[in-house]
Image (cartoon, helix red, strand yellow):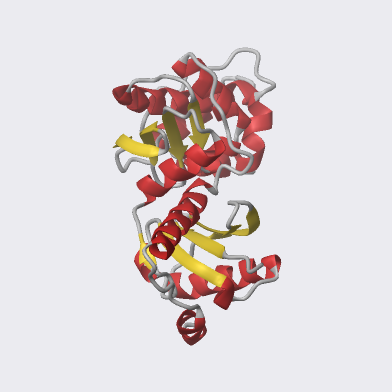
Length: 283
């Protein structure tokens, strides 16, 4: 029996994610990489890496869907689709009862109102870094810490302090002032997490908070922010095993659905030969 495979590539402003799914929507391989300036070269690189991991060739792909900030720069994609639609579909594949999804990435935060895997409404943060992964990166760098260590540090907090500034520059000064006043590092970091969670929770409440609530994006890997978000929202928050992949998985699933619809209409699926030539051209 011939197996068919589907690829979703989410070329975000900070991170690029690619997933290969089989016809049963099982993940065959995925790759996560930092997004650089040369989007087309990066798209080709992660596609090749994912194919090697899966033991497949690009000709095996029945459909390749691109999403994210740089989706138009994926030369071998069959189609592009907005990241909001893909995130909703991807999150629902993990948690079918999701009603609200919150995604905090490197450059923005967004809330998605979802029903039965469909996006009904959404809200997005402004362009300020506060409430995003970039906010944590800047503060961690100022403190000489690794951003991935912030979550475990905050879990040691006994009394978190308030970080009221929404501007990253002022928040950085506020953190320095706390530390100079001998406030324990863990209490300061916990305060930072609380500041992010409070800001994002205010945004999410515009959509009405009701379970299941799912948290995705790179910041969802930070247990401190997860706990702070649960406190701010007043309800449990679910996190996928790999919270960075929801957009790419959603793109692959939508690609699968379009393929099956085409087959049902008796239409021919485009082969992967042309895509391979295009991908090679951009090396």
